[in-house]
Length: 220
Image 1 (tube, rainbow, N blue to C red):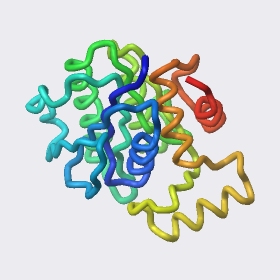
Image 2: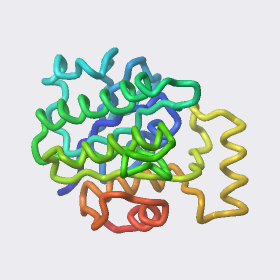
Image 3: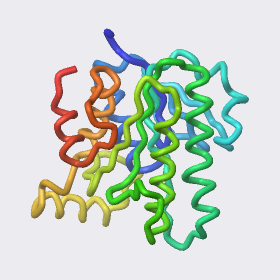
Image 4: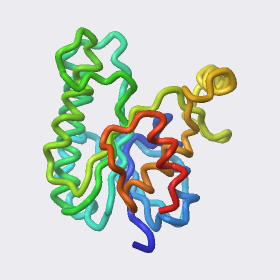
């Protein structure tokens, strides 16, 4: 495959923005469609944007979703202060609905999901967010994609010029990388690993930090 066309969610957030910037500068990516609830202010020859206020209604935009080899699902929200039913609606319901709509328009595609370190694959633990993320991972695996990959990054170091990254988080991430480099990833590595997983695959479907780092260094 000479190059891929990808859909990215969460470009107005920290991880999604970093993955987007990597895709725009990566020669293995031909075209990027960002699907957002609100506008992301960036112009690039590879880039198109689709505003979808409610991801549960993505099917209404079906024609705009066709022709993509992969979805890099980076949208997400913190569980702090949230009830489980609301967090489930945002984290599980919208992700599964989005994945089904994307798959329906792109059979044989790849879906990559930004999950989280310590996600609970048993769905039975005490930590609410980890259970919900675990259920999301498990049910994504049941969908007939060519492949589904769950990325579980730890501390993420942003691009220097990223807009959607709070200065304190940027400083903390760089500090962690300096003292514990095995616990941190550059956001570029996450983007490259997603691209390489689409092009070449990977033997594991749940990717921890060491897997993401290894896949990012692969020549696809």
